[in-house]
Amino acid sequence: MSRDESIGLYTSHTVKNIIRFLTLHLKDFDVTPEQWTVLKRLAEKDGISQKQLAMRSEKDQPTLTRILDILERKKLIYKEKNSEDRRSFLIFITEKGVTAKDELSPFIENLYEDTILKGISEEELEVYKSVLSQINANMTKG
Image (cartoon, rainbow, N blue to C red; front, side, top):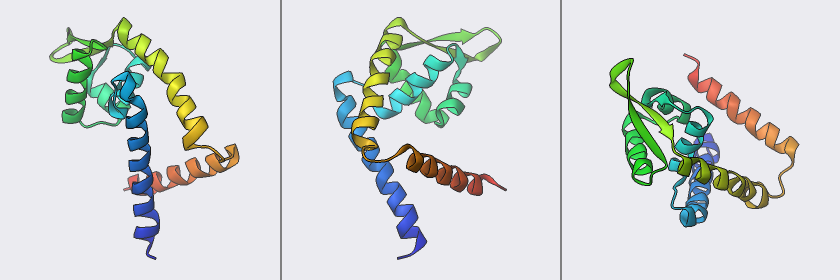
């Protein structure tokens, strides 16, 4: 089996399974994994520009715009004109958004602890994260 199949496809398959699993379990909260990532990053640093939020949540601008529109319709965030740059908005989490984040954080942590990472030791997780970190570093070195 080639490295592409044993590493690339296996990694892709695992990521898709995690997203599918989280999507299924987040249905009751009316939030997708993508929306959750953005909400969580915004809760960590409120009142930032869309560009900053895109970097923090690792989303491209069109994807983030779509997610923000949905989160705004759900009244989990709101936008204000940036007084320093009229072309941009600052993004804020609402009280409802903070409540959703506070409910979802332990729920998602439990999903990881009880199911996704079940039977995997802390040492194995550290090796896993280290390997992923090295793979990412290898690809970002110019």
